[in-house]
Length: 376
Image 1: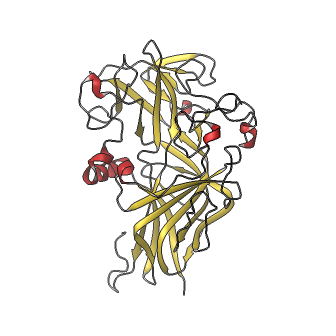
Image 2: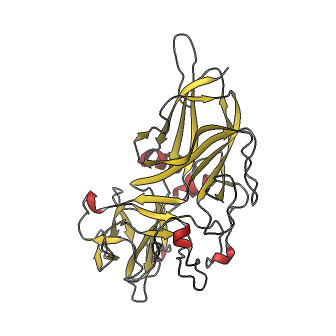
Image 3: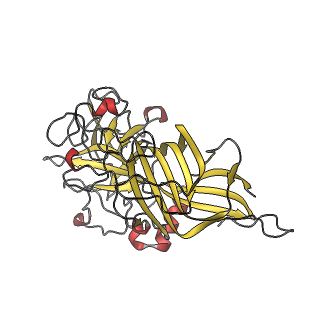
């Protein structure tokens, strides 16, 4: 017998995630950008090459020791291809993943775009979900490796005065400045490499192999030609803030990044606690071909991002299960990247796409009087 249950994606709001982080892990709480007292602006220290500090750091200039920090994006657009629960481990490292023990929650070869926002529930399925009863220690989520982020952010000095950050206008024709910076329609890569074909960069065919126009992928750094955020003095109108695209082009940790060091796997499963404050979840990743089953062999043919989650407390689907939700945590899913030039001018380099975490919640029918139990 199979169980029919309604399926929703539920996004954990920033306040809930932040409370969870501070209560469960001081290390996790320290991954976010330090902000002013009411949380409306990120604090910046100008005049040095590391303008950011993390939550919980001191107030001295030396405490501003980060080139980037993490923040929850206003909107995170993801194209989903497959979501499934698995009884066996699908992750095979550098080999093709094994989905033979997986039961699909969602599977669409064309993919479907969903915009993830705090406090907004988003339907992934048009109808009911049918899952076999069982115990599932693993969840897999396959998405397009082109992650889209829409975000605006205010920046202040420690004393509360407006920070001047230099960016580029919407069409990239002139630089601009201000204490508000926001995304524009530009494509960057996780590694920062473009398709110039020179040095460590991707081959000149990279753009078209990724389904983009020649020259679409841009470098991001601290010059008028490579700053990819737009900045202005006043808060930008919503119409000015558009989706930027970040391509996850490599899973290696090489420094500096190079096409020749390409890895399509993230190594062993790693705990998500330090980065998200969510206990009991380990995560691994693969870059796949556009068939969603074969591991990528180059940055050019990497078109899908496989996210694998291993749960300490497995997901149980039983005859009592009457509800199912995925909670996507995007608390630290955007990296605010700035670049400081030789004159200590801060440039808005880009917003980078970082991993999202997924928790599974189920609801069971409890008693005749109380038709359903609590989400757990």
